[in-house]
Structures are given as C-alpha cells and as structure tokens.
Amino acid sequence: MTAHSILCALIVLLSAAGLADSLYFTLVQYGRMRPDSRLVPAVCRMRESECRSLLDTHYARVFGFPNSLLGLPFYAFTALACALRWTTGSRALLPYALAASVAAFLLSAYLVDALIRRLHRRCPLCFLAQAINGALVVLLAILVAE
Image 1 (cartoon, helix red, strand yellow):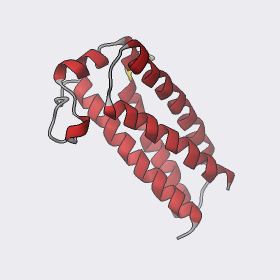
Image 2 (cartoon, one colour):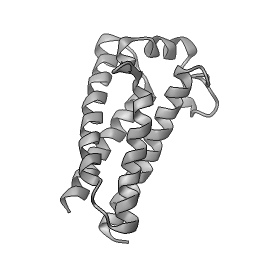
Image 3 (cartoon, rainbow, N blue to C red):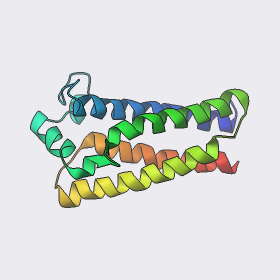
Image 4 (cartoon, one colour):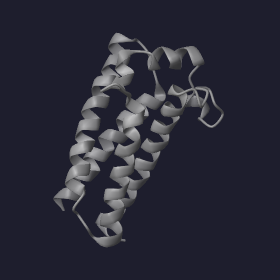
C-alpha cells in the first residue's frame, strides 16, 4: 500500500466516524433517536436532560441549522474527496476538503471552548468530533502537500 493510500484510508475512516457522530446528533435534535440509545457506546451516552440542554443552546446552531446537520455533507464530501484520490488518483477536490476541514476544526474548537468554559458541560461525542476534525486537518494537509 502506498503512503497516499494509507492516508486516504485513514481519512475515509475518520470521515465515517464523524458522519456517524453527526448523524447521531441530528437524529437526537429532530427527535428520531434518544440521547441514551443503546446504539451509542455507554461511555458516550448522555442523559436526555444533558443532551437537550446542549442542543437547545445557540451554540448548537450555525447559520440557523444544527451544527450536526452541517457535519453530514462535510464528512461525506471529505470521504468522497479522498475516495477519488485513492481510486482514480484525482486530487481536484482535496484543496476544498482541506479548506472545509480547517473551517470545521476552527468551529469545533470554538464550540468545545464554549462547552467547557461557558456551559460547564462535558460531552464525549463533542470532544470526539473535535479530535476527528483536528486529525482530518493534519492528514488532509499532508495529502495535499504530497
């Protein structure tokens, strides 16, 4: 396996994890899933009141949409950009995926700061999203530079 194949595989896996995280929060936001669903690992589950208290804040929305809803196309696009690089060699979408990932990382850093310092809450899945976004920035930057 080549270095770019390994990077692309990691990016696709991280994007899939981010997509699952965003899908969970979107389903909870729209009442299609309970926050304490058994589908979520026990360490990441939140009580209904905890999750609702986060989702009902103004921090949970950007441009009028739930943050998680915006995450769905972002993670899908990032996975697509890397899948194209991996399968066809096309680099055309990678700079856009990198720019989007930098924006997502900065937004999620702001949101994690608000979560900890202003809302005084701990949300493992929110922290996971920040870690995924940070890793995507690094891996995409390496991929774009190669």
